[in-house]
Image (cartoon, rainbow, N blue to C red; front, side):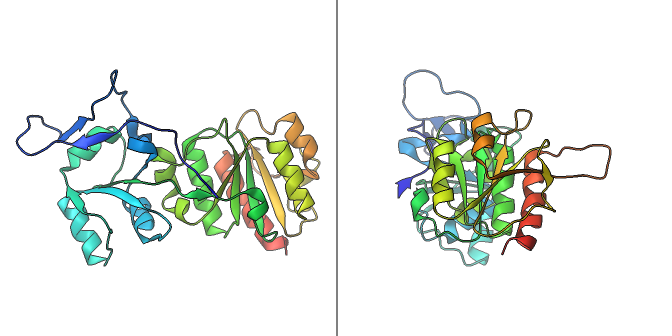
Length: 278
């Protein structure tokens, strides 16, 4: 397995007692100026996780190595009440110290962790059973995080993404996934069409989802192992991806609006497929 996560990023360090400053955080020595919104970056290839559910799931995952854990007094007390042993020393900080690092809109619940990326399995390591989701260049981390959360809810075996044109498994994506990063393996591939062919060779039925599909997913013959392939909003499935699928299906909706946000479409498709693919 290879590690999944961001490339070598910037780091931030807590301000030592007695140093001036309002936030309690200072940038680690580096060249140039650190950008605003560096929540997806940490030192030495670490990923940044924040928010109660995200950090709690990471602390409970024996496969996740936590490097540093920052918590407010209230959050640290809540961790102790839940019987969670971080395995590293908890560094107590003020709420605005975490907010300064993440930006004003991030809901961090008083918790931020720097951790090693989780290992990413190879495609041929997946057991040919159940359902996998294949994401064709879906770049919005909120959408991918929401898809991962839904995937965890439906016991999806893995989510397959491309090495390029996919968000990193950290920061906003991790928060949107609400802990699902710890439950759903992410397989990163260089060539999506080749990956789909490999899935077919391993017995997977490849079903793409597109508004112009030739059959409603609810009427399509489905079986396990099944790979549901989703394209980016607006662009949909790329031509080669679509041509590689065994079938392209649509989601027929009764209302005036006929298309859904991709994360909502994933949830509906998984509900249908989990009922019918066996």
